[in-house]
Length: 175
Image (cartoon, rainbow, N blue to C red):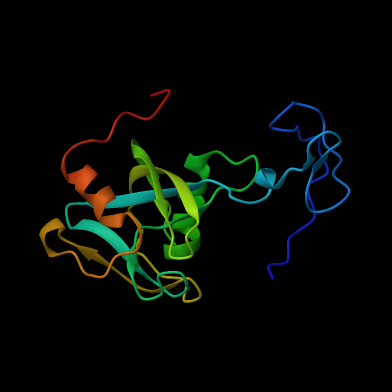
């Protein structure tokens, strides 16, 4: 069983009725609708496809699901965090690089190997840093030319790279 941190000390609102939820435990509770699990679980994800003249930077997962598969840095959005901030944070945590986001690549919905639906907002980015993988999350990382991608890949990584190669990215909102 996953241990959950206590809910932050702030007001959260029911996604069904908008009422303020009690936050005494780890899961906010609406008086009319009960526990509001979506406020602490089934969080959306965010990722960044890091590219330069060498191609795309990929890391090989050290954790399940998809242990040993190649992927782009990404993870779950913390409650109240913007997906762009998540993408930058995950690149720092997983590959030790600071990323400048350059475009919005897309929103992807896919099932993980556990059968859970994941929604991920994905960006294009670049870095001037040398990648140093966090061994707890990433076994190794390397740059790959788009024509020489490794396998197997985790989740929708191939689709993300295909979208980048096809020029499907859009300007960042507000830019």
